[in-house]
Length: 363
Image (cartoon, rainbow, N blue to C red; front, side):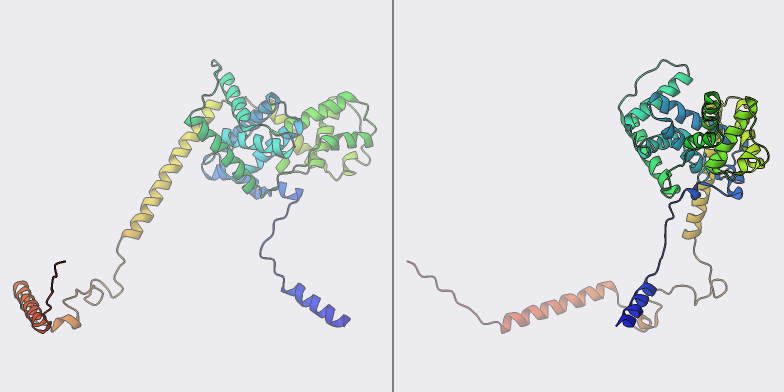
């Protein structure tokens, strides 16, 4: 009996087939170098410098909006990392940077259990835009344009979830920095800890979170802070090797963080004009492609028999062998014949039908 049960269990397990699966791990956040070097925005004609400026500008919008919405730093960090990851799957030319930033902010507030109303998110982004343009701050009118913007933000939130495969939980290096400083015996050094946290928050504007693990980024922030404050850390063996990081990785992360402070501040209006030009060109090419495919479908297919032969030409009804030998009558003669037949049939029916007499009696 036990053998039969084992055989039946083996049969049932063999019958189960996996047609698809979704792996929800933190390893999915890291992208290969090939995908980072050739992003969808660069494929659509956007140069690397403009793309980097758009990434920095979008992350700054999320950070500023999070402060105004009084969100925790963890929620702002989650929104920025999702923003960076999304635009390695989609292009800035085809998706609006500002609306996607709103969608990431709205989604991150839900993920980190600090939800905010969508109306508040839209109002805050509108406030930031008015302040940057140095205009008089006016409230948004609740008209059709506001409703369409609201639906666009909801759509952007769904697109972010779909493109990231619902792997939206992020491991943040805040706690890791505290843990590593405790191991190094520098937990009481408040300046070191605060500066390391500041560097980590600034690194969110770069793409280091799609290149390296959070543990490596935490080591890089401590490494950069200790260099600036002239704090000696163990070298033999190197302290970062205990946490699984290498010197080349730390130097690369430090260079990317310090590059933010040297870079000129991006102009949002100029970036919007460049993206709009590329978007128009993309729309024109798309319309041309659609028109060419429509013409190809509507055009007649070429003759397979070799140029307009009688076999390939469709036959008329009169040319078919079924109707070829039939005599052709004039329309008038045909109508006269129909009349005669109808008269004969009516006379025949009147002769054969019995006469009926109806007697009316007066009461």
